Length: 119
Image 1 (cartoon, helix red, strand yellow):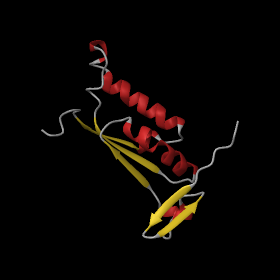
Image 2 (image 1 turned 30 degrees about the horizontal axis):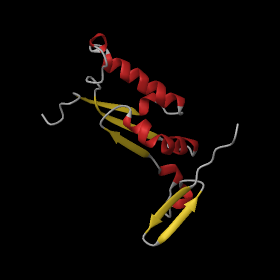
Image 3 (image 1 turned 135 degrees about the vertical axis):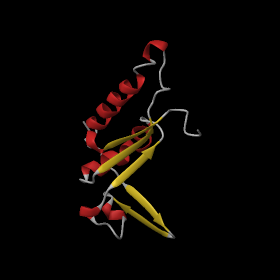
């Protein structure tokens, strides 16, 4: 299997910073004080959109927290799933983050009803 590595590129004004770690592209990096918080409306949004950044962060020993705004209650595909879909999605979310090295205790559910934020 080929070894996978990341290259981070950060543009700051006219300066282009390139490095193999998150710290290498930041001037004010404080390793012991760094944390990442991802906020997403749905349980799958962060892992789909930020999965590589999560992997990189955890590899560099940076704690990752995820706040999921909605409860996933509208994510069912059949009426049979309707009453259990929130718990199904919660278990799937924990499993997905665990495979990436994330911690269950770092996933925060705000539990607003799906499709009900405007109310």
